[in-house]
Length: 335
Figure 1: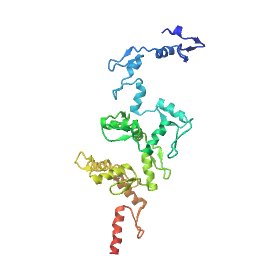
Figure 2 (figure 1 turned 180 degrees about the horizontal axis):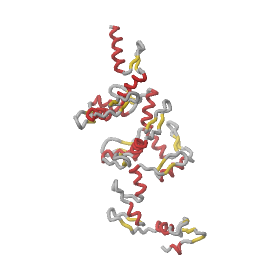
Figure 3 (figure 1 turned 90 degrees about the horizontal axis):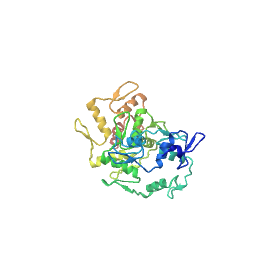
Figure 4 (figure 1 turned 135 degrees about the vertical axis):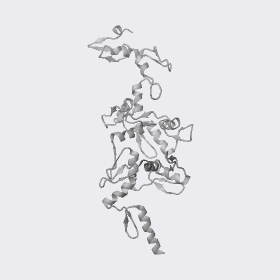
């Protein structure tokens, strides 16, 4: 294509002969004009995919997941978790395409409302996904296990459990993740960022789930109930760990002595017996501990806090086991 004949120059502005686009640089139309051509003479000898431009051919193979992409630079950010573009209205960060969609949301009216709870949405697809929370419908099911999901993206993340794929790698350490949101939360362990704050006590957290669980310590809410013994818990994770008491399942095994545990937290605490690690230290007397809970109890010696009180005589204790022993003295008095 001859740009000299096909473009009209007026006041240093070059116009495309096919569409209304204009360009200020003389080199710009050459690349743009090729987008109107259907000829793709740059072919990949690995996957056979064809491209109009040589730079697209060079960049389309991802070295981390072996998949092919037209815009490799953009795709690579799904591995690093990098979100270059920030919203000028609210400061949230996004990939380029997602930012364009998000910015429009600031000017939109939420005119799609849920007939069940009245919640409103900007887009019909958002309302459709929300409706699944009322109907219980999970249209996206895994063909390898019985799990099903309300969204296709959640199913895609789940499938990586079966494939072992962990495409989201941390740029600061060797950890990798199945979900980009998990990488985002993990990155805060390096940056120290804790954007979620409790309105009651000011404590901050790395993710919203931990904040939600913490808030229940103030409200006393325990929404998750064990179907076998009716014991209630503030988080689903704690309920799952508790359920293993009934099933006898101990999935976490110590590599040094073979002892098995119900939760990963119990295994980590046990591992310190072998390593001698005591990462929790008292700021007042410099005494160190292998578990955070032991440090919490120790701190009460300095503060004088006694959170466990007897409802019979109002006597107070620093630990729950001391209260339990004390309550037996009241039962013996009755006898």
